[in-house]
Image (tube, rainbow, N blue to C red):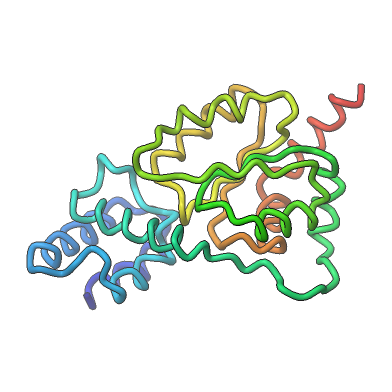
Length: 214
């Protein structure tokens, strides 16, 4: 466990280094073969911060895949949402994103949609609708294509903590339909969502909005 903790810090520092992940995969396999459950809390807490940098399933051992799936299920069941429970002034980034998304529809992939969370996100960005598509290990990323392709959808949010890693392929679908895909590594607080949208897709949203108004 100490080895995994150490190598995980290297992943956080160096990015998605295949050598680091190979070490993590081998060590997790040894622990699982020794009887450690895939849902082990200590292992989950170590890997959680770097889960968004994990390789594809084909590049991981079955033991590491099972651990990642348990982490995804844990987050989905908790529906970890940092949406504010009290009224407070929106951040400047939330206001900027609201001007880009006002009266538009956005798709959110990942987790198990909760009405109160959905409403908080819709209110923060003045959305016409947040189309929240829950995920599980048996759903193909291709099932999201009809939603992404809708002409009234302007962006796709991918909650990578909760979405199966294979859903990352939805990026190619978004590209095909000219929709920006925004990865959300830090939860569903509107402030965090706004920061990721501004960093990853603000320019494309502005260009797309100009095209629609012509």
